[in-house]
Length: 429
Length: 148
Image (tube, rainbow over all chains, first blue to last red; front, top):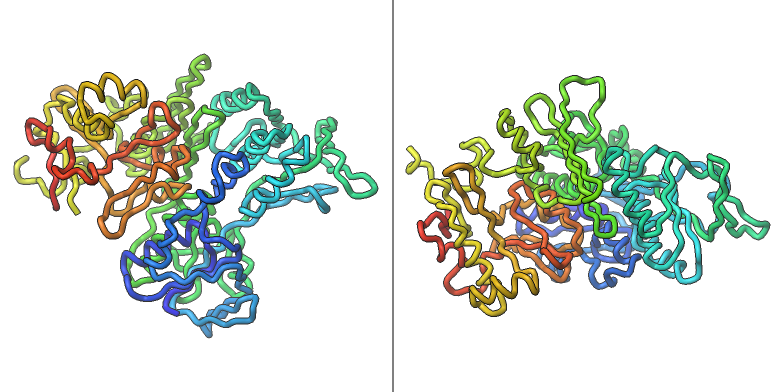
């Protein structure tokens, strides 16, 4: 097989589309351990909340795979990669040869050692089957405790709450979404959740899950001494790269699978992309695992093009999150909480608690390197432009940005022309 | 593929492109009804955005990028690239209003629908025989619909 992709998430979709940019002919084989065509993983919270039905989960139209000449081998787990023989082995014992292989196995939920966590009614919330389990569970339970106030935990809590379950979310750090938010953003979002009736507790975590003699969950002992009665516990601390398969086959692994700037691993013609990969960060320049949707797609896309014979460099990952809390939208991109002792950063922040609006811009020297918007998010992409294209910002433009008025006319002339009116140079001279 | 190219040397900032866009995407196909009624009742809004800075103006909308950031960011499959036409296609029914595309598009070409939890984005007036309404309406030919 010319192209084999292990994993069937968004990185895999990116890879298929990347390959097809270069090679319209050769067949692609996707091996996925779950049973459905690629679905929007973040959509499981919309499904659990009852906002969408299962029919809206798929990421691409049904004809996509046929049109793209992709064969799906679903419900199949790859058990070994042989990088010398260039084969992968599946759990049904099948051996499949590859010319180019992409490892896009994603992440697996991280479960810290909490006494009592082993046993029934402790769940994760990262794939479709988790959501389906919680949907059926939600009908019979009254209370849930969610451990983790990051993206997955907040979304799990919110959607269980929408199903009529009393929810408490526990977050060990002093604020929710501690990486993407600062105190102001976290408190606006936290207040919105509290208004609706969701109990969010920060600076506290689960010490022990208490069970009765039959093994049923009674409640959760917290690190602050409190005790919460509950029927289920959802552990949503985060995900860790699922690199076991790659590591066992001798592919170089650090925090994730190591890739170069063409998404190549240490093994010939083996690539990696998505939550399993440790790839270059756009802002910091070092290699990091940033388990974020857009990065997974972009890495897959870049890997796909390279697998098909093109030579393209990965631009670099950029941390970005968009999450709404009951109608209160928030967006966070790039460096949001720079080190306090580093004088090269300057912060501009405008908070309006009444309007539930917040704008924080983080500048490093003469560049915008990150921002947070709460409430009024409509200009978000225009801030992203300054971060992504690393455009220098003159003082006048900085003032305009700080006033919340980003604008394409602030872009350097050449860049503007290349972007918006290419091929039209003569008349300007 | 043919795209709409805005030229700030010619744009006079008259906003007629926005009005033409609203009309083309209205139910009534009538400027007055579209602007006075549909805008308030159904949240009809233009896919164009006019920027002004001193004497300089420009009207922008979706560039239908070859490799769009919005498609990479879309969690619902509501945005995808049509390999045949090259257009960045928006499927309103699939959109869940997560605003990831709005965050990712560095060209500021996606906005929120004022009423519904959906986005508003240029579709190049798909199906309109005369092509994009904004181009047709532009009095100073600052918008060109062509292959480059």
